[in-house]
Each structure stands twice: as structure tokens, then as C-alpha cells.
Length: 215
Image (cartoon, rainbow, N blue to C red; front, side, top):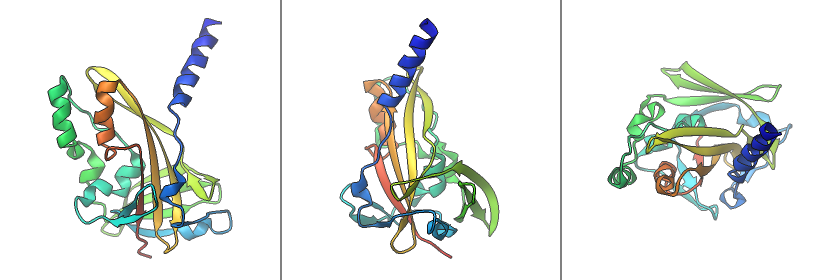
């Protein structure tokens, strides 16, 4: 009985931090995906985002610090290891997020391919010198005109305790044929470390990016 009780508590804790998406980011900016047009996502795209949408759907071009918007980093969604001992360390991280400790941000991928498989799996091939350097594959689920990727929980140690971010991402098709990546992140951490983790997601829990199609 105690075992089942703790299982229920665990489930409640997880879903209380569950993610959802604000449709304002993509309203008027995307075409609804379905089984008939999902193949339009197949193709090759620029590795860095051309811009991002705000919660009202307004698009802003990205002109600086483009490595921060690597598709590989956004889709892999790994948290860096951070050495935090006191509030002074937190202040330094907020001023200078540790992007160099995330391998995908410092990689030299030149583009990425999207391959939609008949069984519902999506493969993202990351290219260097026109060759596949690495790949990531996910089981996708079509919902609300987007492809939803599996929910993930990534953790890192701060103050010698485990602090986590529960994330979900969905893939959309922009009206110009670009790919839209929308991410929603919920922090499962103490109040002192929440600001640190959110600094890695540009100060808020939800963002949407556009990546231009090359061919």
C-alpha cells in the first residue's frame, strides 16, 4: 500500500510540472500538419535559427550569438553541469550563462536533415561537410497541427542537490516552408535555483524558433 501511495505522489509531482504550449507563438505563422502533408517537413535546414517568435506571434530575426539557437542544442535539450556554491555564483551564471559547457553549442554542424518515417518516427541528421555526423531519432505524435516529441526530464546539480527541467518540444511547418521548433520548459527546483535554470532558456519557460529550409 505504501508503495502505491508513493507512486501516486510521484505521478502528481510530475504532472504538476507538466508542460503545455501557448498557441500565441505560432498563430498565423504555421500550417497545420496532418498525415497528408507531414512529408513537407522532409528536407535540409540551416542549423541556426533565422529568428524567434514572441507570445503574440511577432517574428524577430536573430543576428547575434547564433550558436545559442543551434537546432541540435534545442532538440537535444541537455543541461550543463554548473558549480554553484553560493548566491554569488548564481549571480555570475545569470550574467554569463554557461553555454560553452554544452557540447552542442560549440559544435560545428553546418545543417540538419529531417526524415519522416512511415512508422511515426522522426530522424534529425546533423551534417558536417555534407556528411551525417550524428543523428537523433524520436517517436512523434501529430496533435493540434504539430508533431509533439516525447516529454523529457533533465537534471543538473546545484547546491549539491538535483534540480530538474521538464521539457517538451513540438515541430511545426511555417508558411514559407521553414521548420518551427517550439519548446516549453517547467522548472522542478528550489526557489533559489529556479532563476539559474530559467536563464538557460532566455529567462522564460517557452520559446519558438524558425529554421530556414535549404532544400
